Length: 329
Image (cartoon, rainbow, N blue to C red; front, side, top):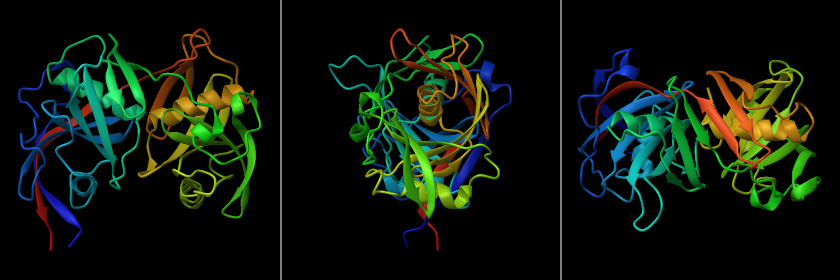
């Protein structure tokens, strides 16, 4: 039977863990790929409620779990529960990186990057003893550099946004500078939307609304837009955004491969870019734009001097333990 469960032995984490070094390693089995019955050491982290299972694979080039095994562990009834499984892998030989990050979503798909996930990844590295002010991480979206702040938050250099429509990728007709798609009209699920397309290494469809509670049917419109491959051939993350004031945005996200989540870092970056380009808000200074997500606030700065986006927010250990991969009846 395809469905599977993980028998869990949890070791609760102290609430004050942020100031305490973990006493054990979370390193997974040294075999190339975990097998049925193997015991998997893990740590569970969350960034504004966007929660991930972290696996220490620093001695490997590839994840020790398959996408199918990861999907099982993400099951909130029969597994550990999570929006995805993140693997801390060694850096490629001869390349200028400290580590490699790979992630499998809760449905087993593999995204290019995850903004909340990269903050959890950086905190995981620090808690493993890889103490550094910053890390240069290889991801499928390119190099990402998280910086550990003195106040316990993490600022991530997310790189430059990708605006070219076909590169996002979207088939919606470009209608703005840089061959971009900015509030382009599109019909989906029987409704007409104005969609801005931005990639942060993964695709995002941003839609501005007057009221997040009354203007959308989130559980219907979200998955319909996510899977509209006629407009987004690789599917897409979907962000619905309400402008609260010139420095404050509020959003709901339907993530590609994960569904509704409490936070999405790359989506937060993408929507700030779309809001500035569409004239919804001015470009903020170093303090950034406050974006309120269901799980809390992130602060996003899109710097004019280098076109890069910087995301600041928390990442916290929830608990650690062991999971045994086994079938369930």
